[in-house]
Structure formats: structure tokens, C-alpha cells
Length: 182
Image (tube, rainbow, N blue to C red; front, side, top):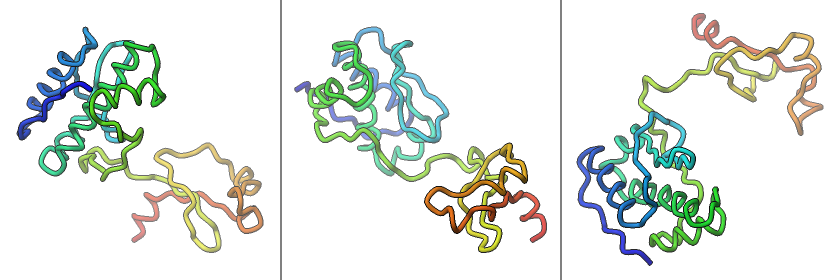
């Protein structure tokens, strides 16, 4: 097992970036770099073809004081991907990645982490349309752009597992018009 240093109290993105670079230098995959991205749906990403570990600026800014351990584990999680790629040419969360996690001291690491939404309000998209039941008003799905559903197609559509209840009873609602009426 590699002895990865515990990070000092992080105050900025630069501190996290320095920690990630130090981990890369210590653990070995040479030629890898650290970059920031504007992702709002994931914490980090390992880009094998570019040899880059990418981290969400929004995530780190949001969790810097709230949960620095989650940031540390995310850095090591992505570093484990780089190590698995360099040693075994294996992507994903398979056996090589698990071995790399053990080497980094995060043997209990999971492949997916659910956390609070960390997107800033100005980056959050509002749904524009909703697919709902014409009689009950129950919403089955939201859309961020208008789907290519014709009225005829909607009459022939149903929600899987709820055919008897939804066949011919679906309608598409423009949420912009609904909110303007209220």
C-alpha cells in the first residue's frame, strides 16, 4: 500500500490541485496532469487518451469546507483509474481499478457516489416540457427541449408497465405556458 499524505486544510482550488499533482508524482503514472472542468453531474473524470485527471470546479468549490474527505477520495478514485490504465490497460471499475484503490488506501471505494446537487443556480436547467397523464395530471417525464412527438404518436404511446392506465392518455405540456398562466 502506498502512503498517500493526508491533505492539509484546503482553502482553495489551488490547494486541491496541488494535492492531486503531489499524488500523481508519488504514485507514479508519469505524464498525467490535472485540469478543472465545469461538470455539474459528476465529481471527477479520468481521460485516458489525454492522460488527464479532470475535476468539477463546482463540486470542489461546493464541498471544500463541507466535506473535504469526499474531495480527497474523488482525487484518489480518479488516480486509481489512471493507475489501472497504466499498469493493465483496463478502464472502468473492474479488478484492476479495485487493486489500484487498495494500493491507494481506499479499498472500500465505490464506483458511484451520490451527493447533493452542487451546480450553481445559474447553471441549473429548467425543464420546458412535461409528459403527463391527461386525466390525473401525473408527470412521467420532464424534457429540456421539445420532443418530436406528434399528437398521433402520443395517442399510440403508453408508459411501460402501465399500458392499461396510460394508453392514449398521455399529453405533452409546455411548462413555460403553464407558468405564465399562474
